[in-house]
Length: 264
Ligand code: NAD
View 1: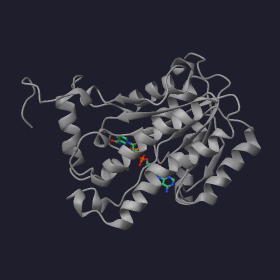
View 2: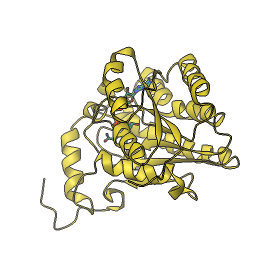
View 3: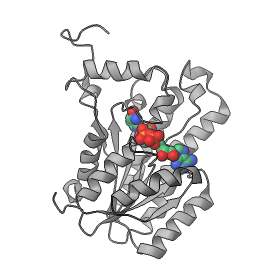
View 4: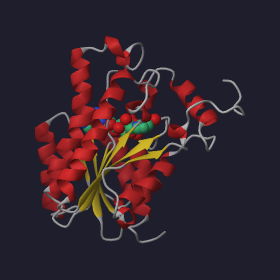
């Protein structure tokens, strides 16, 4: 592998297991020389995340629940104590009550609406505020989004509304932090079978639909996402900020099912 990330240190948030998009990204970054810290939600995940981090040569693993400001403060204080500065952050976190990832969006409840926005949207801004303070020489911030922000997708509901707000926040953060050399982007990933995705109604159908109708006629993998993340987080992406980059086998450009696609 190349040394694209040699000398770069960064935080990976949202690793739950080896199916996580965060894992595909972390593996690609480590293969290109990055030094990684990991944050996970809740002590129960520690025993899963520690061995994965170790596989990538990292013993820097810290608990952080992004819905808790004090927990976020502790995470970034730990980073400051151990490393002083950082070069990048990957935010691969989203959450909504799975009872609202089916049925009608219009039936969403105020409690879950607020929680979904807090964990899936505000947390990225809260992370960027704290990360910027550790990036005196510039840096790169990355979050994960989905096409349900742009178009109505079955069952995505309140999460689609949250992703639309997340994508808008990427643009505002890119402007605010661009003047100090910090870039901020999102990857809009095609559907991938992860723990979070399994909460979405009819997810197998969505996967099959994307496989049959995307220009590349396949689904994407966490490795595909990892390779594009490497571009955005390394010097290869030096001129890119405020972008929502689709890593979805081209699905976002499709206006109508192609005639060669068999019925599903
Ligand atoms: P995942 O379940 O592996 O990861 C989701 C992570 O969010 C978990 O590690 C979970 O612990 C973490 N999380 C949830 N609430 C948290 C909290 N309060 N504090 C800290 N962490 C919290 O699933 P994934 O699919 O890898 O999801 C990563 C990101 O990718 C999410 O933003 C998701 O919306 C996005 N995404 C996923 C897909 C897909 O099809 N899987 C497609 C596009 C975008």
